[in-house]
Image 1 (cartoon, rainbow, N blue to C red):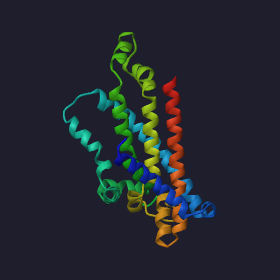
Image 2: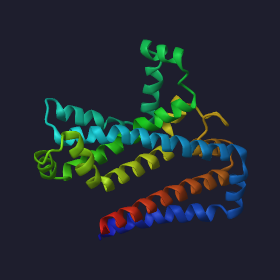
Image 3: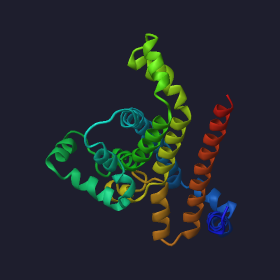
Image 4: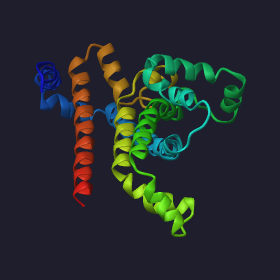
Length: 251
C-alpha cells in the first residue's frame, strides 16, 4: 500500500477522531433528547429504507437487462444512468423542482402534493441512490456467467424460473451491497432534499438538514453530535453488510 493510499486512510480516521474530540457524550445525549432531532432520525430511517427498497426494485431488473442484452444506443443509456452520480446534488434538486413546474408535474401536484413534503424527500433520495444501486447490480450480473442460466433453460426452466432460481441466489452479495449503498447514500443526501423538499422542522427535516440547521444558528456542538450519529449509523450498516457478505462467501 502506497504512501498516498495510507495518507487517505489516515485522513478519514483523523476526521472522525476530530469529530469525537469536538463533542462529548453529553452533547450526543442532548441531541438525542431533542424532539426535532428525534423526528429527523425517525424520518431519515424511514425514508432511507423506502428509498433502498425502491432502488432495488429498479436496480435488479435494470441491471440484469443492461448486463444480458445488447441493443442499439446501449452506451447512451449506460451514460444516462450515470448522470445522477456525476451531476452536482443541487442541480438534481433544482431539476426536480423545475420538473414539477411543468404541465405533467403540475397535474401530479394537483392530484397529490409532492414538493416540500416527505414524498419529495424520498424522491430526492431515490434519484441519486438508485443510480449507485443500478451500477452495482449491472456489475454483479455482468460478472455472473450466462452458462448456468442456459443449462437451466435446456433442463426445462423458463426464463423467469432461471432468473429467480439460478441467477438471483448467485447475486445475493451484489444485492446486499447495492441495498446498503442505496441506504447509506439516501441517509447522507442533502442538496436535492434542501432544494426540492426544504428543511422544515418536524415536517421534512432529515439528519443532513439537521446538521445544516444547527450550524446555521451557530450550534456547532449539536451539528457535530448529529454528524456522529450519522457516522455511527453508516458504519453499523457497512459492518453488518460486510459480516453477512463474509458469511455468505463461506457458505
